[in-house]
Length: 421
Image (tube, rainbow, N blue to C red; front, side):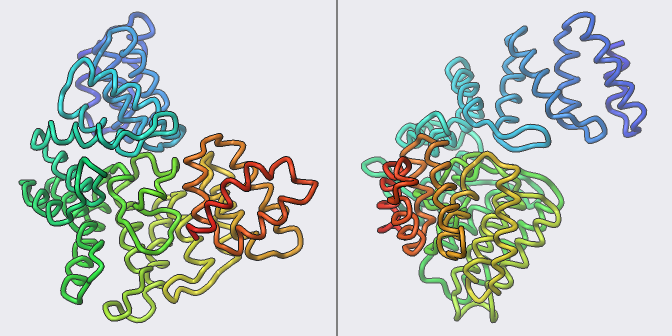
């Protein structure tokens, strides 16, 4: 029966695939046969006819526990890196799984995941950029993506360990041998566009090249789904955006993998929002807004909504201010997400708007964030989103007797926001 299921699962006919699923489910209900468990998990993960990420995750965990199957552990760990229907990203679990795997196998692919996780950290595991850089240097060239990861690290540098050097980042990208139809080609082009676009002295020729690359990779991401580790694939920008590659703004909401189309749109739009007036057509902000809205028509993505809300609230780079739409976008994210990025920016909006009841609600929202997180570093990162006006309103109102029990936590982070806003 197992071999029949192997044949049927390769069919393009829905009936055959469903039958293969039923056979495999029947087999493992009687006996935990390792090949059947792995094949069924793979079907649930990869076959759109029967896709069920929750079931796939459970089966990979079963194979990991019963058979100590390294491939099951690897696939389970990868599934934990990104949001999917029915399952939220769980980088903490991914860190645990891959740390154990790397300790026992030491293979390059597992090491590459650990480089990414060490670089940004997760909710429960603090970042260790020294270890991330060491791993990358040990495995450089072991697989093409290590060049991309090392190139991204050179964009930032790290004190006493790695000097920031965009030129070295570009040199490393040249080491990635690939063809235009390869996945690594698309990822290399993405990193190339990021490195080039962080140049403060953009000229017309360079800007056009960056635009062409972003357009090319956006088309590639339309055709095929790739997932990228956000903390290494977001460009740094000199303007404040909730979702950007600045190390001070890599909040827990960004510590995950995201679809390539989303990453490309976040990066390209952030460049347009910078308003290089001598390089862009009139009203680059409106073009960026249209781009983000276009992505939302295809993918319901929380991070895109938050950046779009920010642009609509402030009217970045000539975009039309749409305060009601901005608030609606944030409310939508707050209903569906456990991360605090949208809730923090909503508190900022209310504290700035200051209609009747706005400031008390802003104080309550921010107090909820600080109580929920109990993480000083994460609170500091989120506090960057507050404008001076909003920070002052929250601070002054929180000192009133009714909310004084919140004031201790609030004052710590609001004081931080004064010099970051």
